[in-house]
Image 1 (cartoon, one colour):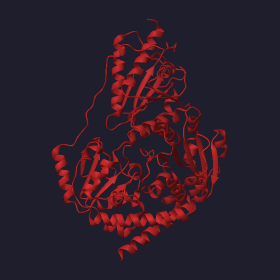
Image 2 (cartoon, rainbow, N blue to C red):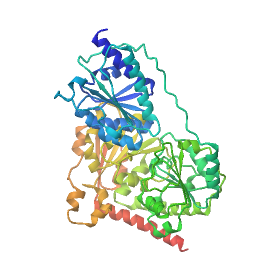
Image 3 (cartoon, helix red, strand yellow):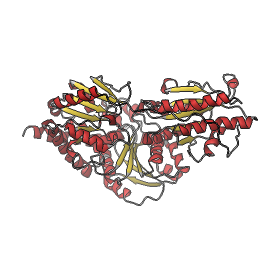
Image 4 (cartoon, rainbow, N blue to C red):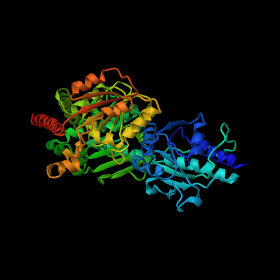
Length: 572
């Protein structure tokens, strides 16, 4: 067998093993050393190939696809600093529990650490940010080597998708020449599959939970980010049987598809409500059950940390359950859906009704703020209200996700909401949004600030290779708007230079460069008019200009209005 046939068999074994393990898409960045694998993926009808020339953006694109689908997504790059550019997305994937299969091509072992070009120390380069790392042997004419590769690839994908899901790294060295034979198949794939069962709660656990829930006088369900394919009907049947209010983070998916039957229990305004001191003091829960990670809201975290409920159950499929404030008293290690069949048979309590009434009051004030406001919150609320049924929202970190928390209100529409909340960074947001859209195949909307947009303008390159449907709303307040809400803002000296960081940049030329439809707006009415214009290009950019101080003032005005209404209600 000549070298070309050996190389062909080697990369086909990798490709077919990935496909058999459930990998259906790979994001490829062009490069010489990764040629054999890139050709192998392109020569298959069983795997979709997505191109992104910038490795940093490519990894976030793959992250978005995996986040939206829940399936393992592969990313492939050449050797050297190309692989280094994967690190930010890998870090997000680790902490967001996203199954990313990182394939880095490499120089052969004899060219490492001897001054060869594009050769860096790649084995183990991602350290503890990946769940598993392997440095493959170079292709050789050895059947046992192919058997090792086939099993190890499937093992790596299984590790990536096992709870808690996360990234894995396969470093794959190639010697030149780098060409393979097209149109061939791997006839020797003997390892068939990895099969896993579901972790289910044992009877004693179910009995204890049912008794605890029945005894609770002030029970709360807190829903953080949940899988996009969660059975929401089953969740709401479970919640209705408890009769407890559900504080639903926007990333839980529970704020959309809300029926009349569950609307009273679906609390979406808790962030504003919990800024009211009296409400916080009067509404201490005795029992909490939390699904998913801690929600975005800081007032919610302060509320829970201030009262420290007697029983705080965290449901998490991983033994490394997430408990940033050390509140958990009990951990249920199982997938959320495994508890959905439990029925407590409780009636809605007075406690639940108080939450529902507070939510109604806050919703009225929030709607009033959206209809009358001129700030970013009003424009965000306008976008959310205007999104069509069957669409998706990606919210950047910093203010966009917080405005989603405040202004995305319960709706009967089917709208998915996504964000990078593993480490809450503003890098790679544009690319991740493109990846979500590529996976979901629905109209998508990205809400992003000007600084986050500047961090990932290269993400727009994706639109040159893949057909997409994305509307990008850039909130341009000329700097870092979220810092105006933090204690740093009270120190006028150096604040603007170190935190405000105004650039004076606008994005019209960027839209022209990529052939995007472009509109500039300065009000909620202007945004509404722009959204109602027909979409003429795959990517539409709407740049909304705002003032950071006006935004801060309008947000505080809303919180004050909600607080005054709640105080008046308590005093009746």
